[in-house]
Image (tube, rainbow, N blue to C red; front, top):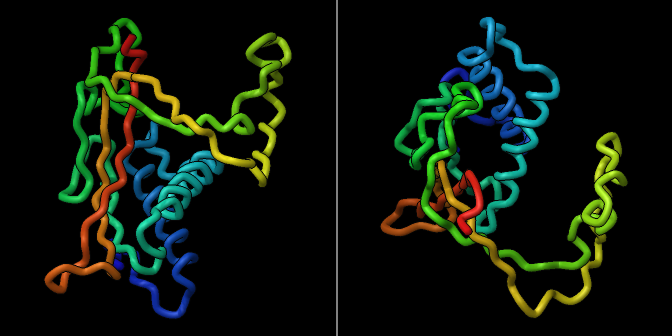
Length: 196
């Protein structure tokens, strides 16, 4: 595990607690550089969401347990890159802190076909599709069922145009080649509109 400057590597604490504390540290360091008005502290909601998103991405890694991952150092600036964090696409320089102006159209990106298993139990509430007035934004979504039944026989797909891609390269320390951990990637795709 690689420690960030200003944040020491774990010693006696549980690794999960160390990772969550590191995410919180990175979020606060990030907001020191990009918050409007120079306010160095993110709101509670912002910090909570960023921490949950980071933890969720880490937990979703299917190749190694958390303690066997060497994670990339996250750039502090929204326009920055590192050797392990790269971005591309027609809107690579735009972000929530430097958004595309409202009077400009979203440029066309590369078509990408998303695929998914069309589980009936995970579909949106049909009442919302038939009558949007039934939708109550103050109510949280229902928890997905714990037993989804048999998987569907087909995989559905839909094309979208990708306007920005983020690639995070990390290392699987328990899978080695020539004595070095094997690389793996997390790819985040931002779509700008339907391609049909």
